[in-house]
Image (tube, rainbow, N blue to C red; front, side):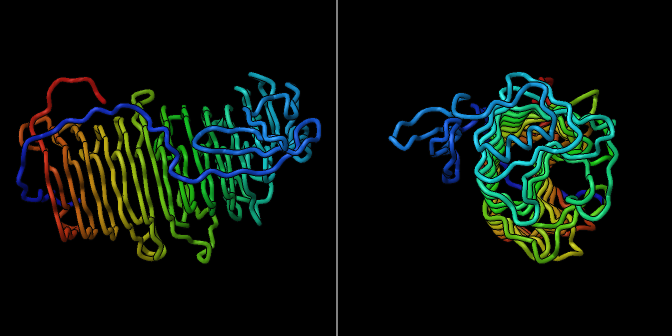
Length: 435
């Protein structure tokens, strides 16, 4: 990278930020599906704003309880569990059960599964996903999964980069393909060989209340929640991943340089991404690489983005807005609003916009802190932004004046057509607890 060239700025009084917790409002409309309970009665399962309810034909509404569904015996194999899933749309696991499996659970359409704290663990050398949807070619709809533990046993698995991710084994914990209305809530994901939760070419997906404890494996791609969908909602993520905690693409995907197998004709425009309340930490002295990565390419757009509440110490940056595969085609952003960021980075900047074409970027309530010799709130590289607003934010470098609000590498020129700054504070770092 060439010498950094700070942008000339006018600084006004700073305003500091305090994150008050996760918002509860789901940005997307709810959905429902019909199912038979354990007695054969027809009921309606409805997801709305984080809550799942059951409505009987008589109009009675209540929670989805174990008496309505089939309970998985605690010693069940993957084969037995898949037989149950094919026959029952409401499934409960035995509380806290541990299932060691050689192949994935396959979830059909219109299915509710409550793991009740049960865990799925891959056997040594299983080289398989833990969960996937049943129809990987045509897709499925209306999958609600909650309350489970996914134990990848990743150090004892071997990836197979044969064909695409559906025919090989790319190390993911889950592999959902062409699913509309997917909900995963209250999961703990540990030591998957690569990405923890992967989803591809989906409609609306929701991932709520996740904790990650991935292996420290710098140089081996190990995202948390990664994929491709029209609408993405992630809320409440904790823990450690060795690469992106959350990543969204418009179609292209690679793992260790291996194409995952998304056809060029399958690239999609992402209509909306909402991310809230992400707080990550280090493990064994290693920081999470990136907090949130958004990657449009192949002439496609990520239309609307809202990120609120992102905290952590990062090896690379808190968020990265980038066309990661520029040789495939241009990548475009519509309106991006990012608020409530507290970040410390080894690479001296909180955020990166790289090879991107963006209509609007609003950065509000950011705290960027340098690790060694300064800080950068925003680094631009080979990008164009029509309208950039930075407000109510602060930058702290370890030597006074070293912190730059915006940095542009000399060999990667960028363009900001309209710039607005308000409520900015810059200065030397002070002794304080990390975010």
